Image 1 (cartoon, rainbow over the protein chains, first blue to last red):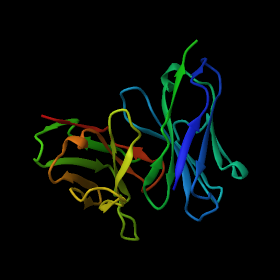
Image 2: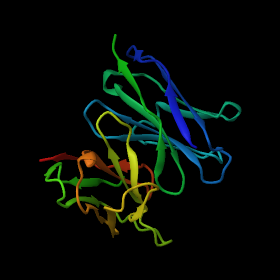
Image 3: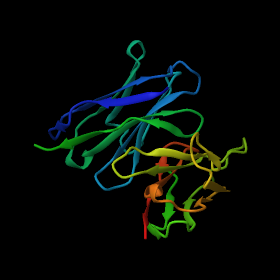
Length: 118
Length: 112
């Protein structure tokens, strides 16, 4: 059974760097075409895709956030880590990680709400 | 960047009646392999999104057959044959044809 769970701070100050960890089980990132994506959702708004990490070390970022995003993996701990620098209030929202194979994001974590405020 | 336009923004449906949601892309989502890279998701109140349809018309595991996806190229439709109370929430389409992956703006479905 595939599960994912996001962890990290619930409150960050403007200009700080957000570090979120996605801990997963039930699949291996070394499986061909398996990936972990990060998606966020401001309160009451639509979903926004941020980044995607494939098992072959292929990393894809949203162009609008590319300069601020870094996605890495910790294979030994079954984790994918997302860093978003220079946080601002507009970055407030729920951050999700999700498993992707073929086309769809078929398994999602419960999400973690991050608030940016001084 | 592909632009995704979803309509309507909201929909109120009588239980047992059908519902239809449209998603249009600014560029074709049809790959040379014959697949349309368009997914549909439902986000129930207070929950994470769940995959309903992938590659345009394939129901994800465990999704009731009252949900169906159709369309090709730039025009796609999600249909609910007979809406049930548990179908309330916000529906999103997502294009995965090329990065960046783009979600539609969402359609809120409520029960009359």
